[in-house]
Image 1 (cartoon, chains in turn blue, green, orange, cyan):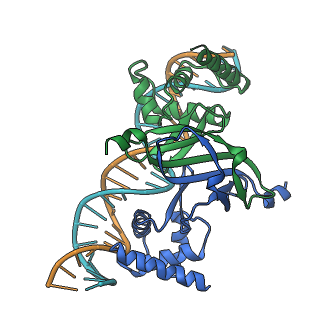
Image 2 (cartoon, chains in turn red, blue, green, orange):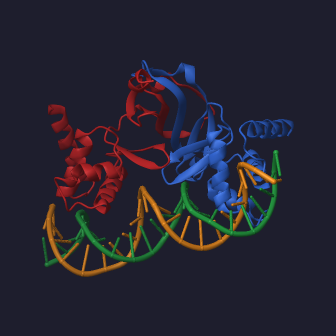
Image 3 (cartoon, protein in one colour):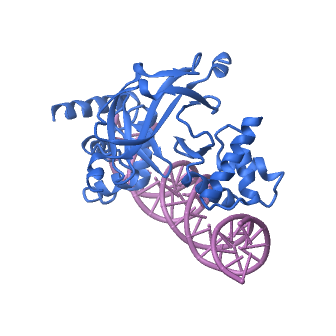
Length: 142
Length: 142
DNA sequence: GTTCCTGCAAAAGCTTTGCAGAAGA
DNA sequence: TCTTCTGCAAAGCTTTTGCAGGAAC
């Protein structure tokens, strides 16, 4: 709990330093991302906040997520081509999508262990790793 | 050259075994993918084939690519959320996108070297690796 | 008091679908 | 001949844009 609060404080400070105003809507979107670590789509965020803020529009959610992404506070997942997902966790880690239930799991990666060839002279800013397959829960049900 | 021809023969055989008819349009799309290893979008394939086959429609390109993807003959890249790209190279390798020029480079990965945690009990069928940053060509121009 | 943000409606892209005629097997 | 494919037009989705009123600073 306390690290969640710390994270939110951290975020609002970063918003201020990026000249992004702390509107009610934006704070709620951030809170949603922080409390629901399911790599949600815009639709999921919209549905999740609709009861609490019935007037919230998808335009605002898009606007918020774009602003947060530009500031580096949120990362975009492009694990599937028909759904843009958002992740408030910005440190290097991998994502696994279960093709049966659709759930996305985080996994830890030691990026330094990776043996690669063909990127000499390239400046790498970003490393995304997307795996897919069947999760243990779905394997049981087969 | 000879390995390209070998690849095309390989592909037509796979198409036959998947009950996908070898129409003129489909073979041309495959030929384009084989000769232009730029991880093209539908738009690029369309533009690239338009002079040769003016009647070719995007619907057919979509249809072809979906059929090829389902058969595992082509892989979809979701390195960027606003563009679906297609790759005729289906063996495990990484993709690097230069954020300056937009070009996508292949790189070689030793998947066995990767140290990961949190996927015990998961059945992994697919591993995608998307890096981004600046390519050497664009770094020179800075 | 300024400046930026919200949310509606409309527009813009990309991809899929329905279907009649055409082509592959 | 039978089945599948093509390509047009239309529809379906997701995301962006224009803009007037409203909220943040």
